[in-house]
Every structure is written in C-alpha cells, then in structure tokens.
Length: 285
Figure 1 (cartoon, rainbow, N blue to C red):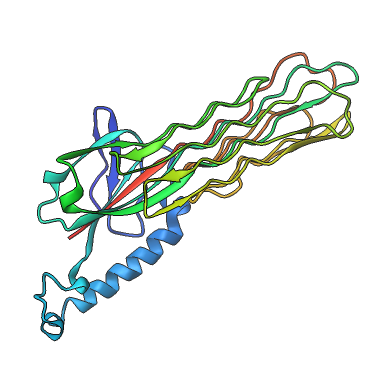
Figure 2: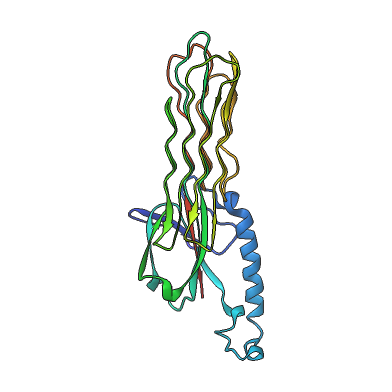
C-alpha cells in the first residue's frame, strides 16, 4: 500500500489490499468492508485469468479481451480534490461510486416544568455509481466529497452537502432532522429528514430517512436515529432517557441523531452532525 498522500486541500488514500485505512477518523475497512472484499475477490479472478491466452478464442487480442480489463488502483476521496487523467496512462476507464453527506440531527429546545422536547434524525446521503470510458473523461475532473450537515442547536439540522465527480454523476446530502416545540410529554413526535438522491449514474439510489423522535413521559424521551446510506447503516443512534446531545452520523453519509430534553432544561441542545460524504474512483486498465 502506498503511504497516505496529503497535498494542500486534498487528502486521499491509494491501496490494493484489504488492510488499508484512510486518514483522520475514517476506518475504511469498517465502512466499506463488503465492497472491498467482493472487489478484491473479483480482481483475483481476473488476475488468474490473465495467465491464459483467451484472446484468440474470441478473435480479440489479449488487450481487447474483457478478461484483461483489470482494476489496478482504487482511490478514496474524503476531501475535495482534482482527479488527473494523465496520472493513469493507458487507462480504459474509471468506475466511480459516491455518496452524499448525511443531514444533521434536529436539536432540542428549552423546556419548562411540564414540557419536554425532542429532535428527529438527519437523512442519509444519496448514492450514485457509473463506469466512465477514458474517451469521456476530461483532462481533469473535480472531485467533491460533501461535508456532513451540522446538527441543529434547538432547531432543524442542516442539509448535508452534495458529492460529485466532474459533471458525470452526483449524490445530494440528506435533509436535516426537525426539532419539536416544547410540549406536553405524552405523544409528541418530531420527524426525521429525507434521504438524499443520486443522479447521473448508471445506478442512482436514495438515502434512508432519519427516524422520528418521540416523547413518552416527563423524564423519558427517544430521539430519532440518523438515516442510512449505501456505506452507513441507521446510525447516530437515538438515545432514550434524559437530556442528551445527538450522536454524530457515521462517515459515508450517515445522518446525525436528534437531541432530547426532559423537563426544566434551561439551554438548547444540538443534534448530531451528519457523516461526511465519500467518492471512490477505481481505475481500470
């Protein structure tokens, strides 16, 4: 595995093994393990096939035969960067996967002696994937990995930012969870944010909605969990109990959880921040 490269405003990791980790707080194997495992197995099968001359069987040269299209570089972008075509001579194309950032969780307002408040979970980021042939790629392509939405401080959470690869494909971030007004304990509900949407790709999927927050009695509330994404499950768990700040969403576009406040809470409480988006570029030769 190459060491992490950090250049000005861009940070990313290249690797071809199952043991790689990305910079900062990202744990790539934890977040992306099922994709990495599948792709590594597929790559191994392709490499095995390259030991045999199958091209003549179909009238194609070895370089033209689909068996010889092999994944040789995978780059995980967690910050904005520029992808440069000249860095990959003789590439056949790239397979891009990306997910928008999660929305922030809804916050909790101040409460009185007989009221409580709760926030809904932020929505998960949308997802898009596409194979782009070399001829359709620009000399450079802007890579944008969206930042997670801020949790609302006694208010609705912020929408997560969009992730994109040039003008080819993109995925919007999840919406923020809402915040309830201070209300009587029994039966108050506060909705979660909608999931983001993918667009422009061969496959486009919506992120999961943030879950609704509920109140039950004066000292028992349940804030909404953050919505899921392609790379993050329902996370930023909604805590049941007393006053609490919303938990953050997982990296890979998970929505942040809502906050909660029981009776006699004198200050607003913030929901959890949404998980940042992610762009994966796989170079195929």
